[in-house]
Image (cartoon, rainbow, N blue to C red; front, side, top):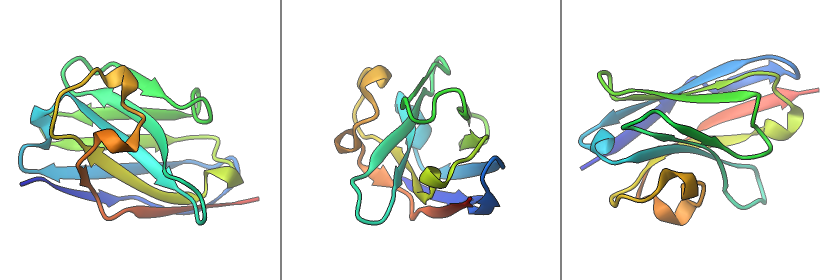
Length: 127
C-alpha cells in the first residue's frame, strides 16, 4: 500500500516562490516515475512535472518549464517541487502521484497513468 502526503502549499504574491514536498510511504519509490499534477477549479487535471526515480531525468509541462524544478530523494522517499516566478495562473491544488506499472516517464504527464494520489495542497498566487 502506498500513501502520499503533500505539504508546503500556501499563498504567495506573483513572482514569489514555494516549495512543495510529498512524503511517500510504502513502495512508491520502487516505481520508475513520480509526478506532480495540479487542478484549478472547473478545470481538468494538468500534469506539471515528472521525474524518473532511477535516473533523476525530468520532464515538464510547457506552462512551467524554466520556472519549476521537480526532484526526488530516494533515501528519504520524498518528492519535491520547487516553484519559482509564480504566476496567478499557477493557482491550483497540487497533487503528487505514483503509478503501479512501469512506463516511459517522458509520457508521464497523463493522469490516467497514475494509481496513487495524495490529498493535495493548495497553492494560491495573487497578482
